[in-house]
Length: 128
Image (cartoon, rainbow, N blue to C red):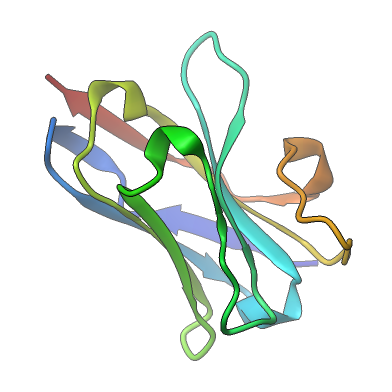
């Protein structure tokens, strides 16, 4: 079991930045995969970035739509997962969720169904 609590969302203008935080009840490295997902109204939940927490040199999965603008990272000392979001666009608006799984798989999971633990979400709104 793990509790995940997101924070850091808000309303910004296009081109600005936000950093989302996900505070966990146990160190991120104890859960092989953690990630950030987002969901806009009327759309399916999609993976934004997924990190393999047990390897310091992991190259995270980052969705093509945010590649070069978003970065996922972890801090095991303060039990926190981050999503740095730069050059935000209106299409980045939505509810952002932190998720984790204890299950190790050879292939990095990106489907929401592969993550049994979720936070409550934090809203990001980007205006043009």
